[in-house]
Amino acid sequence: MLSGEYEHVVDAKGRLTIPAKFRLELGEEIFVTRGLDGCLFVYPQEAWRALVEKVASLPLAKRDARLFSRMIRSGVECKLDRYGRILLPAPLRKHAAIEGKAVIVGVDSRLEIWSKERWLKLTAEMEKKSSQFAEQLEGLRV
Image 1 (cartoon, helix red, strand yellow):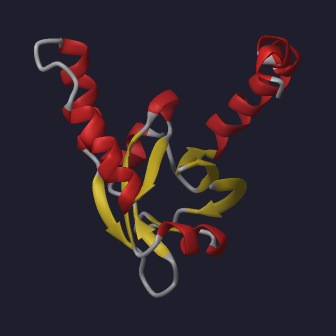
Image 2 (image 1 turned 135 degrees about the vertical axis):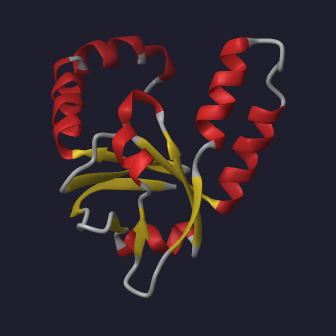
Image 3 (image 1 turned 45 degrees about the vertical axis):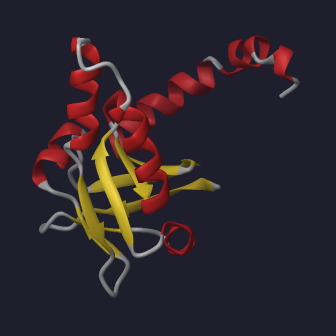
């Protein structure tokens, strides 16, 4: 299970260092794709295959299913270099508005990569709504 929050710089070539803690769990081959809420999703190979299978089972006749499938499948396979970096292609960086500083967050079976600005806005919203979340999750005994 991936968890934690780290800030790193995306260099001029679009490379981002994946924290060592995450590298061990992700393996050498990972998949980076457009995520929800304006971030990028990063999956280890096994989790990516499971996601692709689920997406492939969506009904082809439904437009939203086709759009979601295209969004998810437009990602790329990345290999970590010897310094633990991956190359984030320009279209993916543009989707997530990533320039300069990025925040890498572990979320269960995937990582999320956020622009620092978007992450700060999201965390402010999460903190503002934390009591509301707690009330909604009371039945789950969280």
